[in-house]
Amino acid sequence: MSVIIGCSSTPSIEDVSTKSGSTDDLEIREIRTTVKNNILVVQVSIFDDGQKDLGSYRFDWMNEQEVSLHLEAWKPLPSTPGEIIKLQGIAPSPEATKFRFDLSSVD
Image (tube, rainbow, N blue to C red; front, top):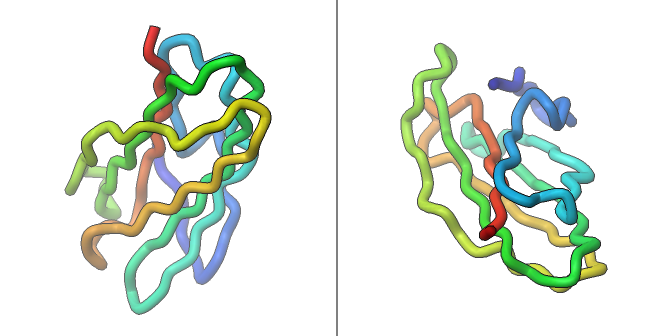
């Protein structure tokens, strides 16, 4: 999955994200991208309408040919049910021009 990056864009959520586990309570509302000083910056907004906060996320940073350059470790989703969570990812290098956002829940 990939996204075309300009100065600032709003990529299709389906094109740049994956969900696994019981993530029905976690809704990705928006993914925005920008490039600052030749580095890709991604902002993700997630709404948690569930009763528990057991999600985790990671970014997979890729080059123009969609070869993974850096797959981040899973991080706990800083969530409070009923709130919008805003996350930011910063590419590890200028070569990382594409990304995938992975969202998972602990079953």
